Image 1: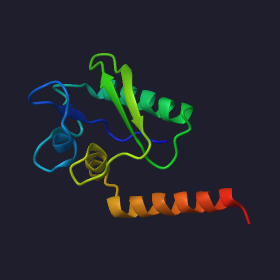
Image 2 (image 1 turned 135 degrees about the horizontal axis):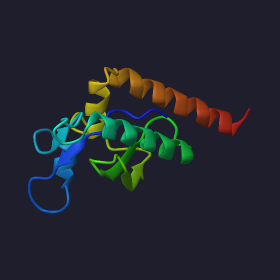
Image 3 (image 1 turned 45 degrees about the vertical axis):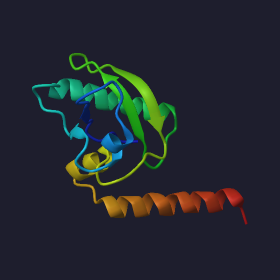
Image 4 (image 1 turned 60 degrees about the horizontal axis):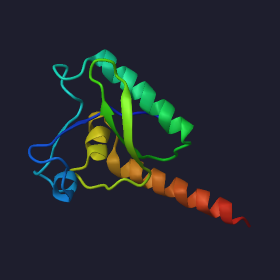
Length: 126
C-alpha cells in the first residue's frame, strides 16, 4: 500500500470530534498536508513510511484510513484505529488526501469497487 499525505485534524472545542465535524462540510478543520510550521517534511516522510509498514503488515488492500497520533519531531506514530471501510463524504480526510495527491476520486472508488467485486467472485469459485 501507498500512504497519501497525512492530515492534521484540528479540534476547536472539546475532546472528541463529533460526527458532524468528521463528515459534514464546513464543520471540521483538516490540514492536508500539514503546514511545515507544524510538521517538518522529514517527519512527514517518516510518518508515511511507518504507516505503509503498518498497512502492509496488516495486509490491507484497496484503501483504508489509519488514524494515529504523530510525534511532529520524530515522525513516530501511535495508532488509534484502522478503518478498512472508512466513512467517505466530500469533507472526509481521505477525500482531501486524494485530491492533494491528484487522484481522481470517482475513478479510484470505481476501481476499488470492481477489484472487491472480482475478489468476491474469485472466493466463491466456479
